[in-house]
Image (tube, rainbow, N blue to C red; front, side, top):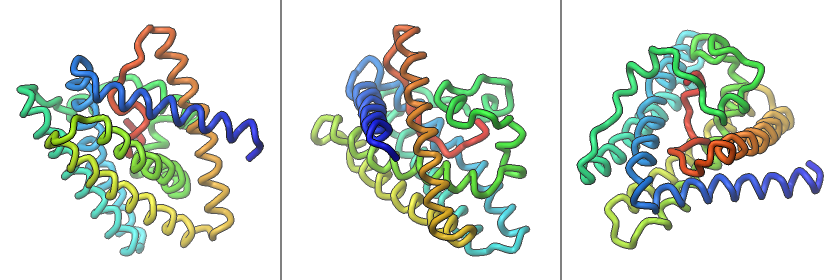
Length: 231
């Protein structure tokens, strides 16, 4: 990675962190941000469960077990955000109809997975190296993003402890995904695949921010964090 790319990565990560923290700390945008977080965490569960079943069928119980634990973590995370929404008197989003419909992919994921069709990103078809590398990057950065968002909350907010717990889980997910990648293709190839998706993420954040600036809207719920790749 050259110096310009390193600077660009720092700038785009800062922009993403700013948008997330600002959206959560602003009382006007906080409900939508929490709804987006709930949707992303809960919506990832069926995808991860399907991947776990596929890993079992392909004779990889080690990966199947970790994907199932990941799914259970995401379900718990969704419950944390659901409770926060209920405390605010807000209804939850029913993500089942959304996933079955023809909703557009977010600008971030449109760019992050550029060149791949929805069919290619389904749990039954997605390339394992693609899934592991791309999701590792998202989970590793999410662990930091959740810490930043937790710090943006008022001291004593009941959600703060939950956000720190989620951050720790995301770090664990990133760890097992890299380990799975190394087991499959070796350390050097794994690091190259991860670096490739770090570049993709930088480009995707730039694209997302440009789209938001054009629309005059700088708030958005968890725009760069979900493991539901086919969403």
